[in-house]
Length: 140
Length: 140
DNA sequence: CTTTAGATTTAGAATTATTCTAACTATCGT
DNA sequence: ACGATAGTTAGAATAATTCTAAATCTAAAG
Image (cartoon, rainbow over all chains, first blue to last red; front, side, top):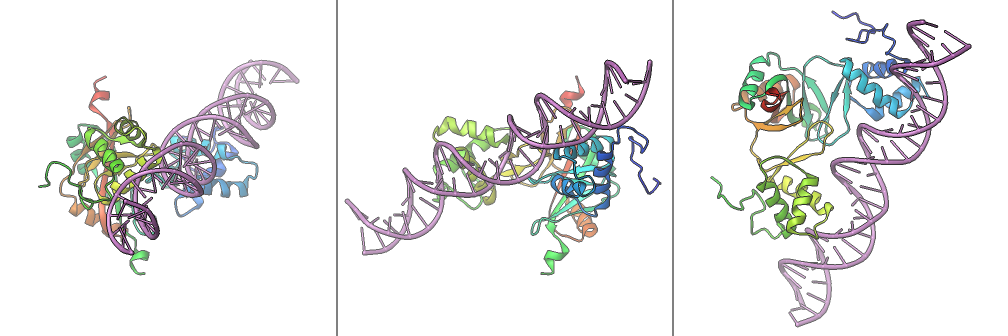
């Protein structure tokens, strides 16, 4: 288990490259239950560090993603969203309201092998996207 | 089986809404083996109809997608690509060169049900994305 | 054959998301 | 403290896509 606070994979809390700005961006992503856009991260980061710039938010998000501390979700032509969950997982998107939720299909090894066989790619990762109607939209 | 030429799902060849420009855009997408961007479709459509505008290409692509005559693939933050294949299928993307290829996992019903169960969505469709190294990049 | 209404196309402006640039600042090792 | 390196800033630039308003086409009605 990771310690609850401040553990990120490669850049540890002691890594000098984890600057104040990057730390703030990381905290913002971690503090949110859902998947924020860069614009939302910028807004919230500004509350903590009013001088932070948009470019730094983007740079930090890229840096943190490369370090494996956060992950990026792109969907359709919409703005990227950033996710504190870095373990492999899947996404469902509501065709009615656009809501994006995480779920996890366990045991994707066989599926990945099947996909690799059919595409002739050397497999590195697999991701499942479900489109459908979310519970909220269904009950309206 | 669909007849080989000119069958699109809702807008048939006799549909007055399938204008000359839309027909040209449809032909361009159909004539390509791979997945063209809007810019590439525009370039090729211009060869057939030099006065066609960028906006019309986008409008036509949207229209044809809504009619179910073509499909749109979005991947990462890259430009959308358009695909003549409209049946359910999956995509593999090369993490080395970016190449995008189609493949098909048959029998996705059980997977879709499992995804629906875990996400609590009413399922409508499922899509699998494999990331990996394509045969060309592997042999270099 | 005109008129009209509605839909489509056009060219270019506008918008949105993201990246780039160049100057400035902070930090680290010596 | 000094210079090197890396990071931050503000704003410009870029890329993809959509919007706008005027012009054009089409089909139907008179």
